[in-house]
Length: 457
Picture (cartoon, rainbow, N blue to C red):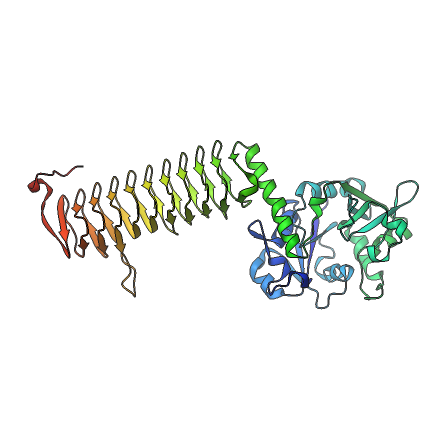
């Protein structure tokens, strides 16, 4: 098996996007569109992957880092000129060169695998991807002779009515014999009126030299949906989102309404989990089995265990253990960790805090920069006052403690195990274990044993 390199064309300005952001950095299904092409090339084992950059090159470099080899096309003089810029970097480093576009994220890796396998098996000068479509989509028709051999690729602008009636279209995705490509690419000539160098012209050189041209033809036009406008962007988003949802459903996940469910490709969901409408599962989110998520829920970069219920809530950078109930209208901010069996009710917020197993945080409460032990009860409207205007401070609550409604815990502060605070208390000093504290400011008044309430709920 010969070695494979890839060239991804991403130098265009993308003026029809009407954006200060380079076109190939616009997100599709949670990722910059160019990264879909990079991932496809890497999945095939391509090394190196050369990205031809031009407009917005620095921002593209900042986004992709060292993931690819960068080649600069200072002047955008056509696709042939763009590929030629990679000659010095790639010549002699691979037997086969795969050319892709950076704005074609819906192309399936399985299709590209077929192309590469066809090229390696039949060893032509060029293997090209074509699509059978009544809509030209701006692609050039493929002209064949009576024996079915490719004779030419005609740019749509230069095609006659007879050629425009052809339905086999060139998608602009190629596998080249590397040695042949680097010998012949410098021979193409500029095409008027723009005087650009078109990669399609290498087909004429192959025909003239009696070199074979192979094709892999697809019928799903969605695969070659390029992006030039934000309308195209939305279409590609829809295509990829539908594929992600279909894959999850085939793997045992129930998605009640895929059309109103938004799931990024890196998200993992366990079997028998139900995703309700208008739910967004984003980033590197992992959800376990037998959960119910949504409706109207946003989960980003969060790990959720098994048998959890999350309703109309927002979770960001959080960890949720098994059997947790959240919402409606709860918010987990980065660093939040809810232990097994925690209940977090409506209009609660947790940030950079751990709630140990069995703890209950009913509603209208905020817990930030804190650690709550197991089986703590947080009353309605209770708040950890963790920020003094300069620094954040920690709050600790011991096992089995009861935080009365409307309590303000002014950090740094500790409420001991099985202690209680009265409703409306402002706690500015530590509360010992098994002690009742109340008032403004709250003071330990007596132990719970002395009050006859006992140390257990």
